[in-house]
Image (tube, rainbow, N blue to C red):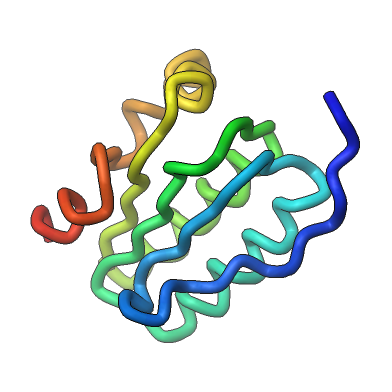
Length: 116
């Protein structure tokens, strides 16, 4: 695995402030920024928070932990937490960890928004 540069905190989409698009490899170097971004969004207590993984090529246990923590924090105030756009390598990781049975997963952001 190649070394990744520390990434800036991912930011919610301007047109959809409850959607957090992620890209690249979500690993030990990037997951603290994902956690920080999720926490910033969760402070506003959106009814639904969507993490778009459509451009994510890899996720490790620290990235999974960031998503699990985000989901738990959203559920504490009875919000909905969804993942979208899992590409095959990332979907396989979720299936191996059986997290595909824990998270609400949609094919894309529009499907997740429609299910709200």
